[in-house]
Length: 82
Image (cartoon, rainbow, N blue to C red; front, side):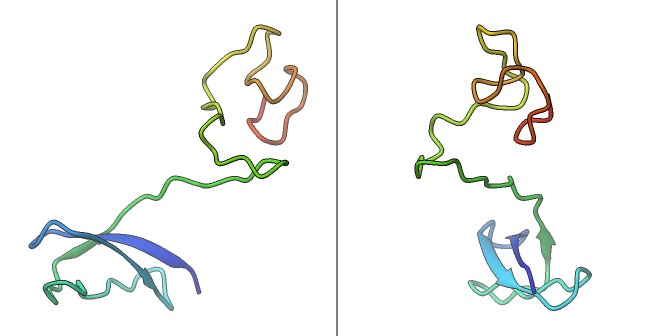
């Protein structure tokens, strides 16, 4: 049962909700409106060493070694796909 992020079109608040089906659209917990939409969430990934994520590069960045990100050397990196 995944947790999804939603946006209420009536009160303009965002909230997270545990849903049982991908098609389920819950009511807003703030104003109880049914006029909500599922948001596309940014994926979160953890790095070794417990990084806070502030130094995780985006997939489109390049490093000085010519790789796809600062975490790989441009080989077959499972993290960024380069």
